[in-house]
Length: 192
Image (cartoon, rainbow, N blue to C red; front, side, top):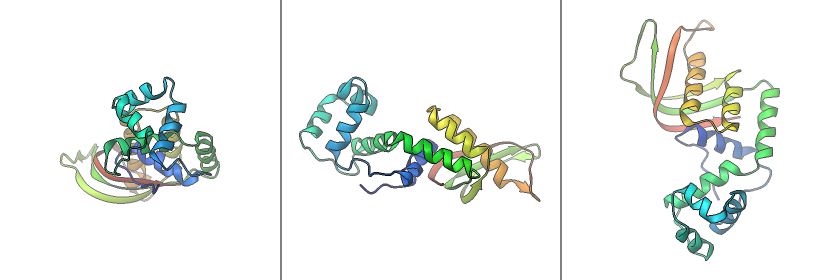
């Protein structure tokens, strides 16, 4: 399994960045992924099917040996779930280590980026490609929110606050911004 390390949601980008810290490879075959996910889910395959937005029938076909193309939405959903759930203790330990050693995190993104401030706003966000270093408390806030499985809107808001603090600075002092918004994220990748 070749893991793509970028995503178009904050939640998935954090999970994919965590995969760099795994100590063992995640299940590669569709059958192995299904067995792993079914063991983790209360209710087995029926509950897993509901979570993946499908019925039990395709999952039983996959257990029987049916193959999926990498472009199949079910294949992508299985990969996302495995990445989200694989080695949670290793993930938390990596987060603790990162935060104990200064909490630096780098984010690269391409998105429609806008802001509002006391001086005005960008009513029409522009597509920007930026790479920034996020400093405390933002990595901590992102990790805490991710551990409690916060909704994507909250993760996006925290990232927006981090971008406001890191991108809009004048002589080392943060600018007076009310809000930074990321709309239609095309590419997002974290490094830590």
